[in-house]
Image (cartoon, rainbow, N blue to C red):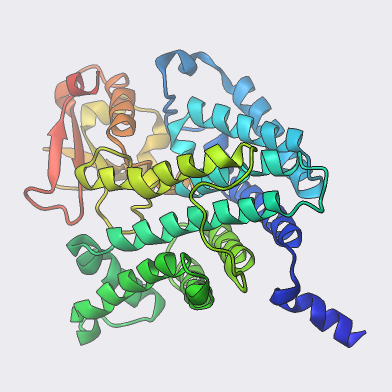
Amino acid sequence: MFKSFSTKLNPSNWTADQRLSIIYKSVCFCFLIGILITFPLWHHDRLFPMVPFHPALSDFGAGVHYFLLGLLLLITIANIIWKKSSLAIALISIMILLVLLDQMRLQPWVYIYFLMFIPFIWYFRVKDKKDKSSSLQVLNYIRILLIGTYTWSGLHKFSTEFIENVYPSMMMGLFKVPLDSKLLEMKELGYGMAMVELLIGLGLIFPSTRRWSVLLAIIQHLLILAWVSPLGGNTNYAILPWNVAMIILIIFCAYKTKESILFWPAGQNSLKWSTPLLILFIWIMPALNIKDKWDAYLSFNLYTERISHMFVALRQQAIDELDPQHLEYLAFENLIDEGKVIDIERWSFEEMNVPVYPSHKVHCAIGNYFCSKVSNEQNLMLVTYRKPFIDGNYKIFTCKDCL
């Protein structure tokens, strides 16, 4: 009996279908936990403004959002229990609708889950389980997804913003390194973190190096899990289930696998076309983010501080015109005479447990929200910035700029 159990635990004995079954159920479960952690993000009754992709989509009320949210929860649970193409289609469709109604929902973990669910539409349609080609193609697709994710996430961290801002924060939060420690001045360690993530992505390309990529990825995600726990002091709890999902993904799609990466899989099914499209969006398009031509979250530009944040500064007259609930997010900052500031990032985290989606469109939507609340635009100042908040790193814009 023990020998039989140990044989099942041996990765060499996992079939492609077994790997995919564990991947799909685990990722659906982690997605469900992520939704519950960020519950206010997915409904309409919140203070933080909605950011629909088109103005016409702003006409849908709270009832539509709650209905879609209820469907999302039920169908996600159904996908954990049953493996059906129709359920995968329903899950993807509802995700699209909810994101169209509010771009704030397009968090990086939602984007990764969405892309990962796609090939299972065709995989679940395969009735002849003796044909291994479809299951191997899905594993190939997931590996391509992870290669792009880790590679670009690592490349984006080769920046002064990551080395000077994020790296010290991680060292102080996770390892309790004191502020005056010389370790914080050792930029080589920061670049080493970026290099490890880059090597994880590149190592997944070659069957001979995947074992090391899996090991490095597990260590990295365990450290991230510690960092975003109370131990590390980070508050982005929504990425806890995502990092668990990434560990499961990389183990079951890469460990002890010998298949080479296929850019154009054989066969006539839809994976033959979805794989090169995935390469376009995951491997090529993120390069445009270097020139701010592609969104940071869609480029896996994460925890680099090469993204824009937002302040809204208000004089007392404007503050008096706001909903009283805004008062808990006000802080004194020397940005506007006789006024206070709302840190939009802090507001988003405290109300929805997610960061602000860093794009010009979202910042303009937030600007429009405050412009509609105040009677005199002179009592309002909108500021986008990149850390640290110094000359040259921030931009002031007006209500007219938001139109």
